[in-house]
Length: 248
Image 1: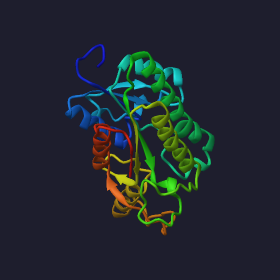
Image 2: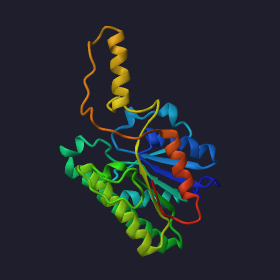
Image 3: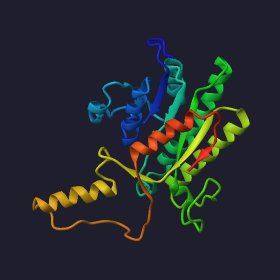
Image 4: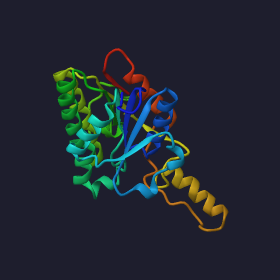
């Protein structure tokens, strides 16, 4: 509970992304007071129309002290860690930033959850989204929770690090920390630099006579695809189980 409402509180980091938008709206519908964090300096680009019922707070994902302050202020019962850099391609030119934001930041969050538990007797339930990119080129089809990781990019390596940390801290400190390994998923609020929006925007521009063709990257890549609303619904259900574990 927060100090200003009797509703249970949920903290969603990275609330301005497609998953954050859908998750926040589902949590509000569930009767939660939802607090969402966003990267400082991005206020002008926040999708405010989708987040009217969400309390917004700036937070650098790498700032442990800042996260601790948010934790004490919000006192959430559930935390969904959706913040991070999501581009596999960009992770090669921003490898150190990706390692900090997608990997080491999760270590700091887990450390703060243990410290919070020691202060208050119980830590919030924590959901860490993992990525199918962790598997790399896998001989296991389909993958399961036990499929070995073979990350092939800085992004995938950072996600694998965060995944294993979450498991380690759950087993070592007995906190409720679960992982959800996600595959590609899309929605109407997906950013324009992702492949599905890139295709649809390019087709629209071709129809309007503004361009002649669509340029794509590797056409040999094969992925399972889903709807973001379904994926975040699964996240909510995972944190409301009796016991924490890992899902794919």
